[in-house]
Amino acid sequence: MRVLGVDPGLTRCGVGVVEGVPGRPCTLVAYYVVYTDPADDLPLRLLHLDQSLTKLVAEHQPESVAVERVFSQHNVRTVMGTAQASGIAVLAGARAGLPVQTYTPSEVKAAVTGSGQADKAQMTAMVTRLLRLAEPPKPADAADALALAICHIWRGGTRSKLAAAADRARRGGAR
Image (cartoon, rainbow, N blue to C red):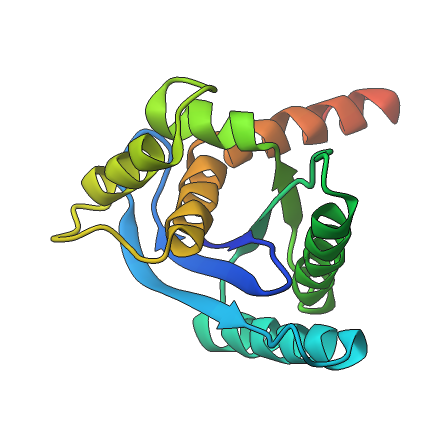
């Protein structure tokens, strides 16, 4: 399974592409950080992010997209930009006809490190180790995007199968 992970941000949006199957080591395909200029008008920044993510989806042909779920922060301005970037990432996957799954930061931390309370350094170290990289991916936004892709490979398949089974049960029978 090939997954494109997105750590949404309006100024820096991390993107990581990983291949793998549940229970096995994953393989790095590529990682990027899409930058937008804070001096630009919001519509131009969102357009640049949309065009960049659409291009990366087309280039890497993932089977699904994993996006970090926006969580409440004290800085409303920061959370608004993150939420807007998240919406663009979800749209890029949906436009390509791909399943899109969101994960909270603690879900990703737990999947990658075994602790939902892991810090940035622990996350980066585990991503480096799990993908057998010679050096840590930089900046941290890229490492976070790779962690999202790993989380989806390891947990997303199970989550999707459970959701499909529940859906079949609601419709009145297994297939």
